[in-house]
Amino acid sequence: MGYKDVLRSKSEKDTRVIAIINQKGGVGKSTTAVNLAAALGDQNRKVLIIDFDPQGNSTSGFGIDKEGLEKCVYDALLHDATADELIQDTCCKKVFVIPATIQLAGAEIELVSAMARETRLKDLIEPIRDEFDFILIDCPPSLGLLTINALTAADSVLIPIQCEYYALEGVTKLLESMRMVKSRINKNLDTFGILLTMFDSRTSLSNQVADEVRKYFGNLTFKTVIPRSVKVSEAPSFGMPITKYAPNNKGSRAYIALAREVIKRA
Image 1 (cartoon, rainbow, N blue to C red):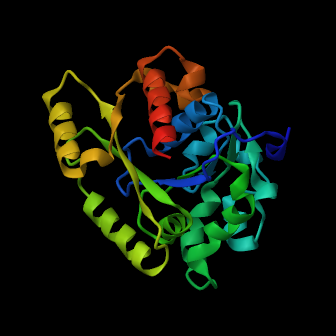
Image 2: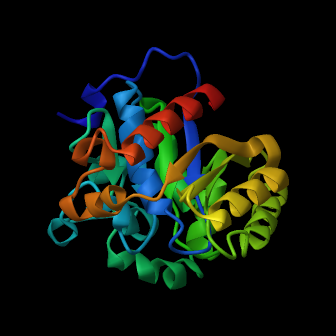
């Protein structure tokens, strides 16, 4: 069944394009993209993930064999492939993926001399935008041209922040990049929310970081907190989101709660 055969929800709200972004690696960015998408699908929302990270973790997180792909998002950026040529089904209802492979790593350099280089991703999304309730962009952990493309295409950003030392390191730079894109390219860009990840209630450090983030970002911080969980870490190796791999796990419950919160905010 193709993505066009799957109906959107009956919500009257417009499609929301959300870039999941943090220039710091290892904060749960791809984990959040995969598991939030799956949880939104379970809430009867039609979701597209665009894997925009050369590591391709969102692609493999749904069990898609990167070696077997004929085309990926790289071909849209550099060779004008359309979304129809790229969108893949997943194991989750109403959830689809535009995959990434290591080819995407070369796009940063190849885009430098390209015409309209900042809007390539936006141009890919526009023809299929109305087909989905949510489009999630899993961004690379950097502030290069790929991230600029994502910020140009998105309506808003979701920033995962791990509950560990140096949690806010680099976020200031990210917010500066957002302000630059907003002032010059995408005037409607805003912050959708701040998500606390890898939270361990047993440690004073996690609690201190959570308090610091809530104090700094206020109501932008989601009430839902994603706990540290072995099952959440294991799920990608089985090519499944946590909601499929261990539906009763605390991580699964957290992402379901986050999906409900995201739907309310949207």
